[in-house]
Length: 310
Image (cartoon, rainbow, N blue to C red):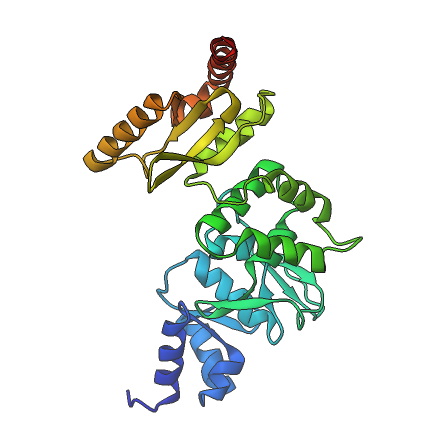
């Protein structure tokens, strides 16, 4: 097949777009309507959505569904809500449905359509589609997910460097007016994070914060700075500074490997030498034994308060 043959151009375009091509794109590449219909009848192409097709043998992936919906929605469309959250890689979001925003009136049982003006919505490109900016995405999902899931999403956005706490707060104050979906939920979440806008190192640390609230523990300061020696300052996962009680949450990602273990031991020894008591918890403790974790922390707080009194 010649390189400039319409079928060749269509195939190359589709391969760049996760195996997806629209009828308008095929026509722009020089393929006639009759040739398109022949490919559909032969099974070389299959219909995904009205006017949007997949090449035979293209992998059935999440991105193929996203690109198909994006091409179907046409000009002005933005992937949004849970789909945008998944494309950003945010934690806590289960994106089974494909969601998009568009000013057009569209309906499909395969796509959740949010009809709204998109021209002024902040956006960015991911792969071959445009998505709502991460700050807008957080506001959009705030109404439909639990508080815990929203906190996981916010923290992962900060941890991945997709945004900063001050940027999310400024966006919220600018765009989240009365009647805007998700306003109350995101306001509460920003208020909870205000004392420590630094992102946690892992999902497990977010889970511990949620455990603390659920078990009615006294509020601990997250990412609390301690100078171990001149020029060496570390941030404790959580701390009760008045009682000099440190809570360290050990996740595999941040605490694996010989070098990491050695540093954890040295760090803990220096903290103890300064008068701190350190409690360490792992995934199984935080997720499966929250009541035991809470009881140990409360007991340690009482003992520290008594020992520091004398």
